[in-house]
Length: 457
Image 1 (spheres, helix red, strand yellow):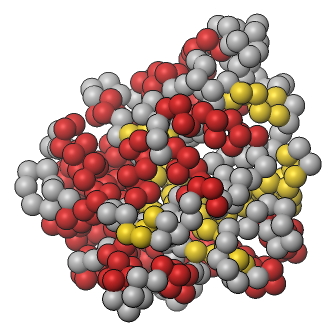
Image 2: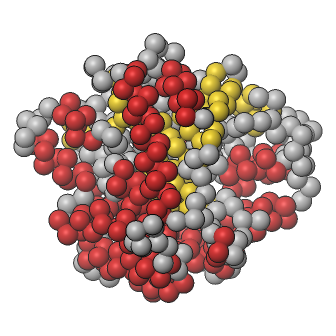
Image 3: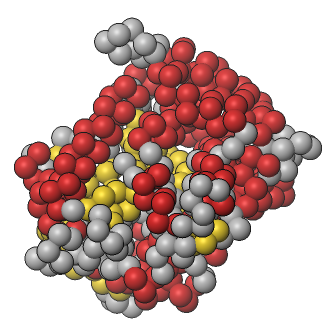
């Protein structure tokens, strides 16, 4: 989730709905300027007893942020607290219960992305060793109750924590107990955005399946392979889901702007503080009728903040965010952008991927998404068969797309090797969660604490 670094009070005022639509067009870039932005979260735990450190304890989250400044990271403050860091490799931010996130810089190729990830993990592990904390790469806390988790001192989270129980039963779990990998990708035009959005939504369940890595809740198997994905099904229906309208004729920037206008607000940010606007209408804000700021009109920064509070499976800002994957180890942090870059950044691959999914109906796409959290690659496929039946074909398309990009490292290797962890999952037939469950029921003897040795960075 985004971190504010300055007040929006003096931003450009929105005077027409056209400005909202134009905000998406500003993201258009020629293909030689397309970049890759990778985000990944991990759980922080004390090495001694595995508790989740609070912000203020001696070896807690504030101390961890402080340790990282030795690598050139600059603090971002909110109400006297360091709540993020910025630097050459992007930004480090905190999810609501202290999940530690790197939002990477926009990079040209996957070799750079994986090197960035490696630098970050080396830095946090060195800082963690000094403080006695470790980092866990899973999609959900395997053993923590909500009550056992700390809350980070960020104003937007206080508002969201109050609002979530009003609109779903699992929103607090989303905030406190989940962790993800995401990738942000560019588009050349409105038509290019539309095609990428559609392919991204249709194949998001496959990414969820391949990265499924959250089979435990409070120390026991939870009956799911990606419980993190299941959580999104009952978080807040007004701002989540598969967005059926994306597949309708005429979809484009304007239709997404209308969708975003209908997403209830969370907050407005003014003078370093978050004003609670949970459940209010951005349409009222456009008319100067927002009850918490009567007579005031929104700025473009307010609109961008509001866009960050919609959580569909694919999200549009001035780029597209792929949001379906559970957290995991370094190799899969590199593999997720490889999958989507391969599918979406080469026209031949994009056409092939679209040909694969264009015949799926709204009902079939939704049924696939609904079954994947429990069944992963065994989810029923539109037209018959199982999701695993197309997994290899999709990876072949991504491989071809990466090969066509021909982005080479110093050794002359292209980017296709970053797909290898996903190839192994398809070859073995078992997603990461199934491997963990086998160990839980086998060599671990039901001892969930063994997951810290298995899934830590």
